[in-house]
Length: 177
Image (cartoon, rainbow, N blue to C red; front, side, top):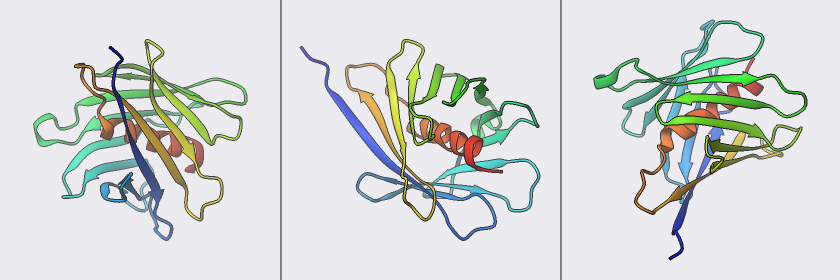
């Protein structure tokens, strides 16, 4: 019997006229799902991923100043406040960007598919595709289309908020100063 697959699509759009990094995430039907905010005028890069009720879910933190970018994703929920969810490290490569992710969900790889940094794929350690990311070429504000691939065969589905936080890390690593 074939495995049934359902995919979820999201649109991540950076807010254009803000002093800080802010993003709005919508589902494929155009409904707002998440907001990502940062505080303006801070030296360290810290972002908070919130649901539409304003409840903080995840914190994204850049680790110091390294030759290759390093980020952490921490829990922002009251029950597990500041528990590390993932550690993201940029790998040294020529032309295409690549990241190694160590998380409570397992190991992942985020690899660029082209030298223009507009297409990426997120794979787990078994080389199964978890998400496909495409950055829109001609957009006023940075915009990403994310397709999260879910398997409905009885196994645990992926944490969408976590995957979307990984895409924000990717954006911060490539385009935020």
